[in-house]
View 1: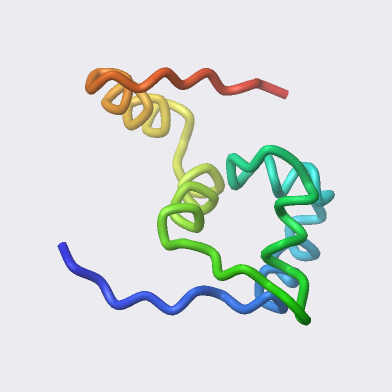
View 2: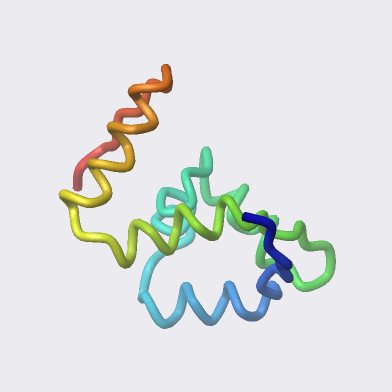
Length: 89
């Protein structure tokens, strides 16, 4: 289904981090980024990178979906050939 998407601003993402009370590393993990230096690329107000709808979807899915539902989606991804291993805290 086609969508019209406007990414959150760096300020929006900084507010999300504050509201969730997470570190930059934890936000990077939530977005499936390699590290907090990559997260900062999305929150730097002077030279930011726009967050893709896919990345934002992954973050919100992890925040909103219960574990069985998230695992069902990940299993569907695995069924088409993806390898996904999530670290559990």
